[in-house]
Image 1 (cartoon, helix red, strand yellow):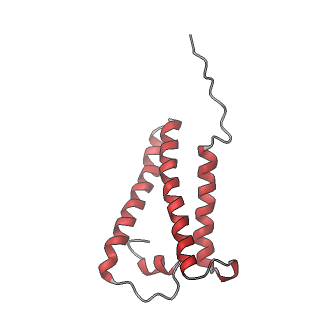
Image 2 (cartoon, one colour):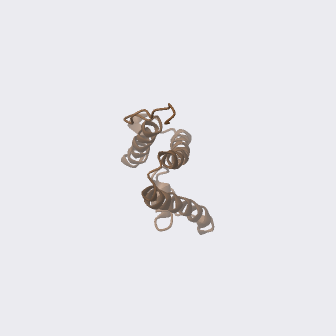
Image 3 (cartoon, helix red, strand yellow):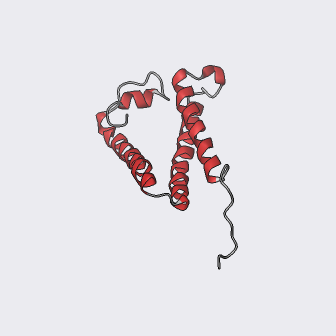
Length: 124
């Protein structure tokens, strides 16, 4: 989306904005590159290893992105005085709702919910 639909990306949290200044394209290209890197790590690295420690590091890094995304959405809605539930549009609910959902899943995974506790005693 950052590469092909920049106006849509901005309109998802800032409705009725005029078309973007083409001089700001680099911001979206950098954000898109970062998201592609995360996608590659999620799609390739995590399938190349079953080391839970590697999985947790990757998920913790993506959790940082999730928190930044949620903060930026909150800030965008705050500035526009649209934090009231009735003022939020479908696009807002989609952006925030999906991000909250995956953020909760990541936190649950990182907390180890559903995993058996590893034995800590020495194997002789």
